[in-house]
Image (cartoon, rainbow, N blue to C red; front, side, top):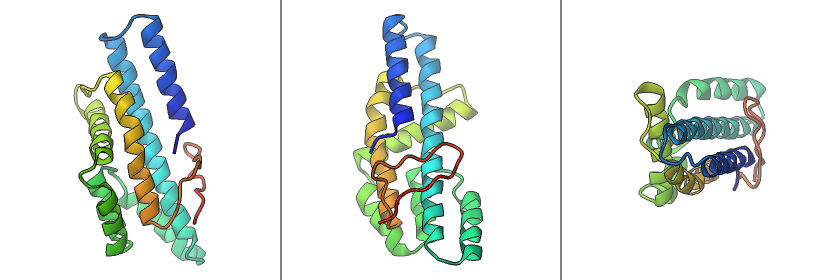
Length: 172
């Protein structure tokens, strides 16, 4: 799976850093923090869209509306542990499927490192991740989103959720 907007932003930042010789400067730190926030926002959008798609499968518009509203309240933090807890609300089997795929993997570490750096950017002096670290962690982190979709019985195959739209993800 790829997320075109993020892939493009990473490439634009990479070119800028290289063309302006801005590696190991505050400019690199600022661009990296921007990308971390952008990536986490996209992760949140995708998780919400997946839950909304799963809710629509119920076939009852009132139950689906409730699930969507409740998920907005319950899915506040998107670390792997929180995603596992959220999936447990759908059933222990959802949680276990997710955990068996993700926990203690490179994807888990990459994903949680990015989420943790977003938290540090928002609430402290900023994350300590370099651009190259982020660029190498990001592709690995996408496996967590795929595992989240799989646990819900959905797929992300090339889907694109437009930011802010709660757009649809294809179901399997």
